[in-house]
Image (cartoon, rainbow, N blue to C red; front, side, top):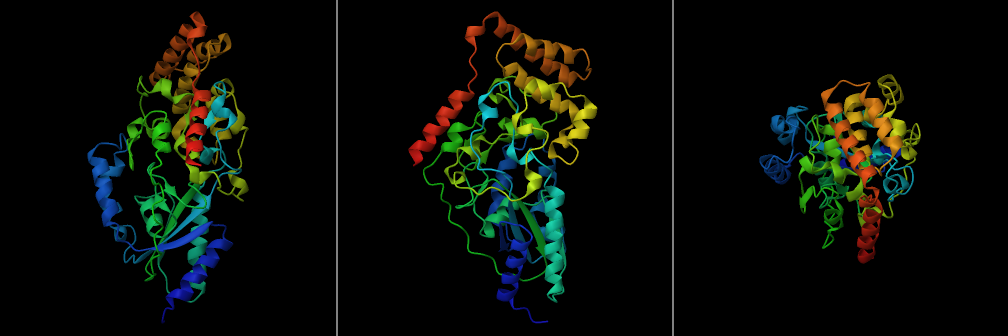
Length: 377
């Protein structure tokens, strides 16, 4: 049948809105410029332990290897912050656990894949013979590159996709299709002279504009990294136990971002206001049960304890914290966890011996962030 591309794309956009996506756009499969940048990133070893990123380079370079005869990519985004983002209380209170906002609620992968599959079915209902495959961070896909090409935003200096109206607190998904869709007009890069994300990164992981060394990134260290967290980076992590949002929170484009309508993304189990000791005391059974359907579950109980142990080592000196660390030490046997608990115990003992020498830096970080944002107004 003859395809009226303009009418079809208008219908796809309408269906995407009905399904709850905040935005939908269309891209080609040509990623030559992005692949060159990606190769350079790999050559610098910025991917750390994520060896699969190197091993699947060919798949990322050629979408037709993931779905034969792919001609176009439908890119969508879905907001996930339940309320306007800001430097929250859990970041300024060193005894609270700070968790990246995307992980406070239910896992987004299945939800978005289901919505994308429904989008493909709706296109078929229009009478088009369509082959498609949905992806949500589940295959070697350069999702930000497709989203940028589809007009959903630009890739900023912190390497996140930034939308001029909605910032960057959203998930991305793709529908590979064999339809000859017309690509969108790209959104011009609007980072300008702003370097707020680079200045505020706690560990200096954004080594240059548009260059992120994952080996220093707190999100990588607490989620992807399998081994011991480097000693020199532990004090810089503060109380961030799963991911880090700092480079997004300081971005001026996130100040006007809309809250999500998805109830599944609302915080569960009080995770947005939980104490470090409370979470550290969870048994493995409690961890698995409470994080069923959560993205946090995939790091496993041992890395969960590893991350919290570092945060407890960074917390103010406290007899109760020291007792919690020693109590957990007696109940675990994994070397990975024991190493970080021992480090945390040493930090606590040092702090209790000279309490006036320690000052948690979260309040300073927030003041610095507000100052940076103030200069941007």
